Image (cartoon, rainbow, N blue to C red; front, side, top):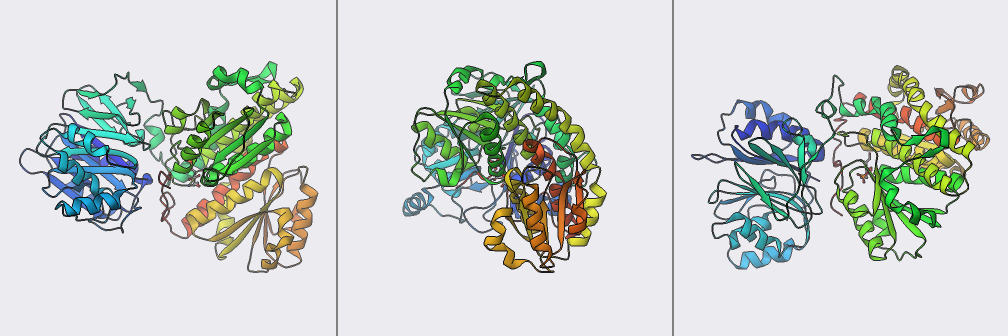
Length: 602
Ligand code: AGP
């Protein structure tokens, strides 16, 4: 995915674009670029690499002009070069365009345009849009853009400018987010609120197939839309004294639980109130089967959701990757509901799976963090995680937010069925305690940093867990791979003897998640099997567990809670461990190589 920002108003556009782009770098950071239109000299700058490297030089430039667009790229088509950075332009250097998404039929369009005489300067799919707009341009940019987009297959969020129709920015979207920011005498466009929150909190989410035209004193889109307020604050999109967004976001995990449950629990009734499900609550009473669809870390949250829903709500629940679900023949009856789980609400595979299920006419529910995202708009009903902006590419606090919401879903579905008042109350009571328990764990930051120092000499890790903590083993391993570039695999404890045990030796540490729960004894057997093979063992264990320290090398203790809620606590040390491993290795923790915050292309 890529980041887009545009500005039109009375102030110099460039500093606004530069600071906005820096906030968007987490969306893509292999190259970046600007186009600013000044009456005398238009300014175009495109560069491979991160903005920070060129920032000093750019800040010193005197760039006039009150209209401009900018882009930070995470390349999908074409190598990472200056030429492939956005903005792209047409043959006459009249049309300038930034794009997030993918033009699937770009090869055939490019061939056709080349035959018509167009000359291309990049290898990207995006450039065909510039030449298509050029082809239709007769002086009116929105007209030309509209005609060009009719020929395109794929996904896009775009912002376009023209030197020959200079007083406007045209924006359009299809499955890639575009928001308009409305301030007194100025307008902004962006792919993400984080880019424009300093200037305005009044935004309009552009819908698919809509085209917006922003002028210095007004704007219009096909449909009249009323601005809605963004609840995020500026402080939330800044590091606030932390060295990385990831650390800040891990430290926000306790309040993420509070934000997810606030106003949603009715303690004395052992029940929850999820406003987003009100309209479908009668239909949900009849549901006999659930399928949860997600990708990456959200998929691991979905796996934990399955354990919760089956154990406490008694509903058979299946879990699938968006990328697998969309291509398999799934069999549903009308008593099935699908839950889509996505931090961004824009993950291409999850959205495609959502569209597949909608074709089958079954009820769709969403859990996402992003208000107005594609998923939020396309599901029949849903709940926001309310985790606030997550800037680091690696998901941490939003995973916790998803688990808290899944616990609320479990109470919701359970109380509609056979869950007793006592059980409902017990889960709610524990959920309320979790933020403080999480704070206690995060106080062990120094101990976890020391463990990272001890273990950063190793290049391979196995993470083991069972039942509720099996997905936590997967999440711990993913986080280590993602930001520390170390080989790490997550396994269910029971699967260890079916292969991975062969790897155990003194150079191959095992990270075991073994709280005092229903599978504790089984985990202890796993630990003993590893120990006799001399592999170093780190454990996440419950404070009351007195014997684990005798059979492991290092232990991080967590407080006791209900088994179904343990993952919300056991994952915290794993997030911190991955963070410190990456810091010790000197990597760019918030922007790991080859990855972007959300995967909006297949
Ligand atoms: C998490 O650390 C990853 N960056 C990634 O696996 C992510 O969870 C996945 O791409 C799904 O994203 P989503 O929640 O926005 O759909």
